[in-house]
Image: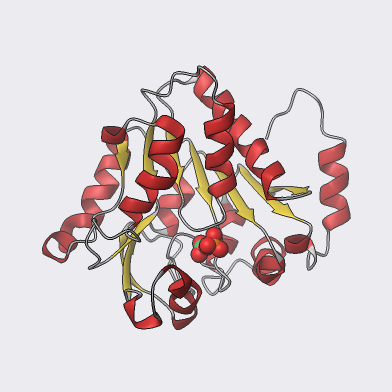
Length: 259
Ligand code: PGA
């Protein structure tokens, strides 16, 4: 089962996950990170920038989960722009090693296969950071997504477009489509780290962790993966039936075990 770590706040989550990433890079300087966008992973990137010290990150590569289709990459809300601004620059990653799916309409027919090939050529993702949508999506795998899906184009739900409208001037500026790593792609990463903060995520977190494995709740795919860490705050933990068990497990964890 996933290890569930209930932390005091988002900063504590960021510190915990950043330390795990830095430990990985310490043993594997050419580690491959799976990068998520959205508000949730920002504390991880902030903590990475603060805590990296003189760690050599020059050989680290990264693969973003998703990108909007049809939004020019120069747009400030394209995920290429977001990843550059919020991850690559502050953390100090090598820009040439950071990949984002290409959402340009001219190449969209083969962009999914190209992205899968690039991930495979890099040796696969070591740590995949994930947020969760209020509708249970991970990446932009909306409810109904196949657990075997690979990187491809997806239509965004009305809920996701409404959730993301805060990054745009109005709802109709939010693209209708994305190109996203599939659930099958995500499940191939060696370690999944799912983060969620706030009461708005409590229901999706409870269903993903404790509900049935169902394509209707895409994040429930994490139940099929052998190495998952879920890091959430108290507000996101309120609907979990087994929160006390998770707390006991984490508090009594052998010192030699890391996340
Ligand atoms: P958020 O988005 O981190 O901005 O809440 C999460 C998601 O949609 O995956």
